[in-house]
Image (cartoon, rainbow, N blue to C red; front, side):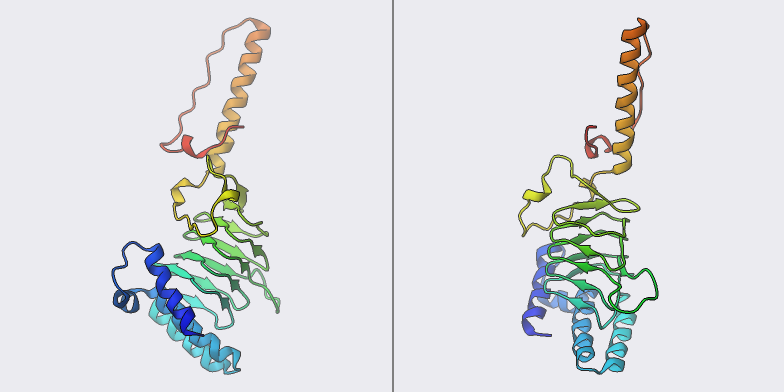
Length: 239
């Protein structure tokens, strides 16, 4: 634990939360910051071999903030936990720099095996509300994980993952690979919807088949009409 890390933890609150007004407000009113600060203390004692004391600090942290971080977890600088209630980070998890974590996120294991059993998360990653990242997997740099996703496999850098189980998708109209490393995109509503994409592909395939049948048989077919909920059309790619 160092003052540089604590200073960076305060700075990221202002960078990523427009509601933050002052340093005093962050120090007194941000449970995500409190959780990171207490974890850094617990992790310090854990590394020194005072494991029981570290667990006690972690337990107090959980009681005060609703955020459970095992003292053995390794967190980088610039971690921002927004709202935070229900966040769980396991013992062997490793989280890089400038990572944003929303409420209800789990960085957990998938079994009772010992050793490395939790995820390794790279730099500049955004993990949406309620997402579950499970097992000894690696999440690359600049990855975005959509709200509610369940990620069970490695994710390459510069990707967006959505769905259950998590699948790598391409954001409509935006090239993630070309994004600036410093850009932390928090617009969950812009993430593509894989279910909507599949339905649109099916609709277009049926329309192509209808057109082909019309050409072959000389008959007029009533065109397929599919109604999508508001906003879906903007989140799907062409087949």
